Structure formats: structure tokens, C-alpha cells
Length: 211
Figure 1: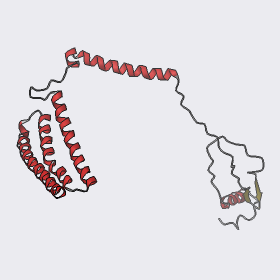
Figure 2: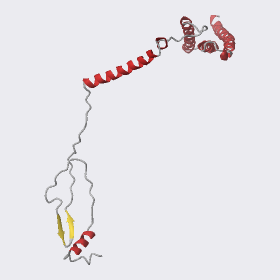
Figure 3: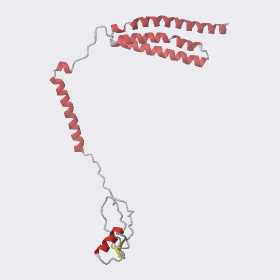
Figure 4: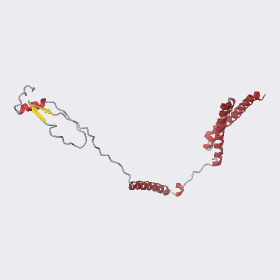
């Protein structure tokens, strides 16, 4: 059915044709409080069988949104502390249920384990050796004599020997790490030789200055 057949809107059929031919628009409304439109904004007038809508205007006023703020009250904090204390008490009760000996059992080391003073000596010796290497290197930079840096390199095998010994003792002198004992001995021999050679080079470099 065309628009020419619906030109004379004299019957209900003609009005229905006009409504089908008129364009339609879908409007999305913003979420928020509904505002009552003033009269005449959306008023529709019928002219010659067509329906005309007044232009729509969008409001630029900001939309108020409700925000929820969390307020920590003293009662809520006390409730959280009570819950944490209850959990801790339950954990202690579980440990004590298995027996006081199991709850307060102290780790026992084997007979060949090193004592705390012995570990203190081993650790302090390694730290002192590393500090001495750093001082040798620094003195070589300040004095301009690279032979002192050679001494720092010569002390490196002895540091490896100390690390082998500490590793072997850390694992309670395990039989699977027996190769560390031989490696420690070899690095000690090499380190003694390199330290001697570095000291001799420093001595040779100081001889012409004395003459």
C-alpha cells in the first residue's frame, strides 16, 4: 500500500497507513529519577495524515548518584579482633591435642653438625676474606699499581675453597657431597700458589723504586 492511496485520511484505514509510513525513533533514557516533561514538549500534531513530534532536548543537569561509604565502627574492629583470637586459640588447641611433646618439639641435629660458635667463625672468616679482596682491588685503583688487583684475583681460589667447606658442613657432611672435600683441597693448593705469585709480583714492582 503506497502513500498515494493514503493521501486523504478520511477513514481509519487511511490513518493506519499514515502511521506505518511515518518514521519511528527509539530513545534511550538515562538511569536516574524520572523528570516530568513540561506540557507541549512531546505534543504531537497531525497534519495531512502524518504525525510530527517536537524536537527532544536532553538535560545537561548532573545526575545525582548515591554512594555507599563504609564506616568502620569500634564494634566492627572488636569483632575482627575477636575472630582472629578465636582462630589462634583453635590452632593452639589442635597442637596441644596431639600432645605437648609434639607441640614443643625441638629440632635435633645429628652428632656431626657444627655448633653455633663454629658457624660464627666460618661465616666471619668468609666475610673477612671477601672484605680483604675488595680492599686489595680498591688499593690497586687508588695507587695506580695493577699488581694489587692481581692479589685480589689470587685470593679468589681460596674463597672457593671456603665455600666448598661451608656447603659440605651445611648438609651435615653428606656422603653424596664427598667430592667437595677433594675440591676444597685442590682449591686451597691453587689459592696458596696464586697468592704467592701475586705477592711476588708486588715485591718485584717495588724493587726499582727502592733502588
